Amino acid sequence: MNFQAKMLRDDALKNKNIVVTGGGSGLGKAMTKYFLELGAQVAITSRNLEKLQTTVKELEEETGGKCFAIQCDVRLYEEVKQMRDEAIKQMGSVDILLNNAAGNFISPTERLSANAFDTIIDIVLKGSKNCTLAFGKHWIDQKETNKTVLNIVTTYAWTGSAYVVPSATAKAGVLAMTRSLAVEWAKYGIRFNAVAPGPFPTKGAWDRLLPGNLKEKFDLAQKVPLKRVGEHQELANLAAYLVSDFSAYVNGEVITIDGGEWLKGAGQFNLLEDIPSEMWDMLEEMIRKKKNK
Image 1 (cartoon, helix red, strand yellow):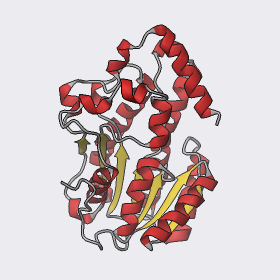
Image 2 (image 1 turned 180 degrees about the vertical axis):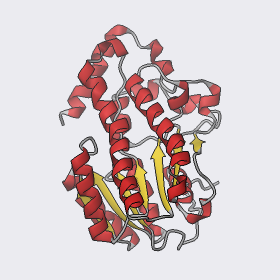
Image 3 (image 1 turned 90 degrees about the horizontal axis):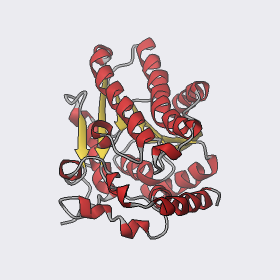
Image 4 (image 1 turned 90 degrees about the vertical axis):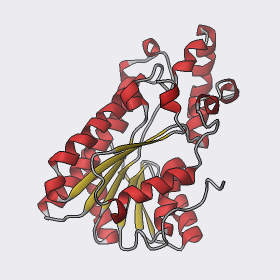
C-alpha cells in the first residue's frame, strides 16, 4: 500500500488562502506543500525568516504554487496582528488558519525551571490563542464567513503524558479552545477542528526529543499496533480534507491519526520511565549541544 498517495482532487483548495504557523519545516512544511498542490495560496510563518524564505523557494519550485514567508513570533500578539495584516495584503484575504507552531522537549518535570515550562506554554497555547483571536476577531468584524481554524494537538492532550508535561498541558488547552469556539463562533461562519497525530518523525523535532541512539532504544513504532510511524502525506491528506469545503459539516472534532497508539497505552512518552537518572544528565547535555548548533 502506498501511504504517500494523495487523497483529494487537484483543485480541492483552489481560491483558498491559508496561513500556516510553524510552516518552515517538518509537518508544517509537508502540509503546506500539499495545500499548494491543491491550488491554495499559503503564507508560512515562524521566527526564522531565512528558513522560511528557503522553504518558500523550494515549495514554489516543486509545486508551481504561490507561497509567502512572513516572520512572526506567535507568542507576541502585536506581531501576530502584523503577520495577519501582511498575509491579507499579500493574498487579499485569509480563509484558513492552521495553528501548527509548537515546541517540546522531554524531561522529568522536577528538572524543569519555571521558565522552561513557560516557553512551551507560550508557544503552543498562547501562540494558538494569539493567532485565533487575531484572525477570528478580524473575520467577525469584517463579517467574513466560511472560515476555518485547524489546530494541531496530540493524543496526550486528553490522556496526559509523563516527561512532556508542559506540552501535554498546553495541547490540552488548545483542544479545549477548539471545542469551545466551535460552538461559540459557529454563528459567525467559523469552523474549528483539530488533528491529533501520533508518531510522525521529523528530523529536527525528533532529533531534539530523542538524540543519539535513543530513537533506536525507544522505538516508538513498537508502541503502535500497526507497527509503523506515520508518513507525512497521510497527515497532509487529513489536514487538507479538514480545511476544505468537503468537510463543511465537520465542526468541533478532534481526529486522531496514530495507528491506534493511544488506545494501546496512554501517554506517548511514558516509556521513558526506564531511563536512569544518569542518562537524563547525558540526555540534557546532548539536547543542549543540538540546540546550540
